[in-house]
Length: 379
Image (tube, rainbow, N blue to C red; front, side):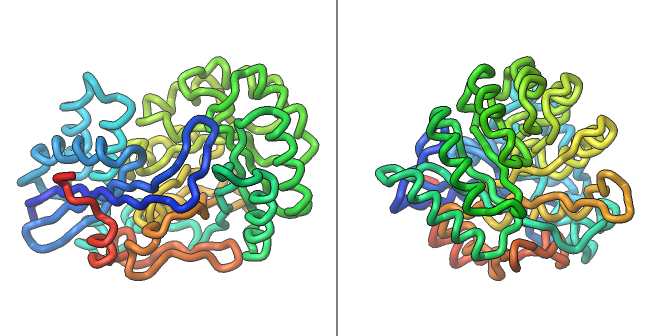
């Protein structure tokens, strides 16, 4: 079996309602999917986190390194591709592009052997995981608190046992939003907050102290990801557990954060950190360091399926009679192609999601939907 083609697909949709994170405005939804084809007809799918068009360009540049290779040589291929781009690509787009390729190779391997990826990784500890709803962005042109109330009530009605909202818009506004969310959710639903590095350390400490009594599970990306000392300061000077990691690419980036004891919760994204090959090494480092790992997820059903394969094999932490399952981040913002690209969408049942059991990632791509949302490569 040999690789004959590596093809990126750029998906795009213009949103009817734009929304803000702390540092950017989402007026569109984008995705970069990767298809790897073999000479026996086997096809694997992956996804790249981050800007779709640049990811696609780098995937195309990497493709020449894969043609003619055995797709089951996943580790040698990973090492070769990384080595060819190492001098300019230890973090950032080269790592996100490589992630999509790597996930596709694991999908091929699972299909070749007729087992889900989690079986190739050593077997599943669980067959389903709890999902938390990610949302709570600030809609452009709408009242922030009114929109948030409508959204949180919807999540509660759907049975989610955890919700994450976005902050980083200003201390007073953020405190009001967090207080409202806790009031609406009640005490039994987990609440997480994500600043998308919208604060400096001073503001992050002030925010953490102001809402410390509201039962926050973690405070995500309080400051910019390159400032590990600022992460440590936030962690030491306010009581909410600190989380981060979606932009710490590769094992070396995550090792720096682990060594600095910068976070309580490490959040690599399988579509950004280097793929399945790399996230399993990051998970082993986190376990050895005694740091909880909960993957970041932001993408289509392919990204969700890849994350679920990883969540299946994460060891129980701590190892006890009734260990806690790791969370699946389940984006609930507007994205019409998120699950439409799959023939069978991944859905939650009262806030819980089953691990796909089919070969590879356990999902199938709907090529008609793909054609509907994919940009022509000459645009």
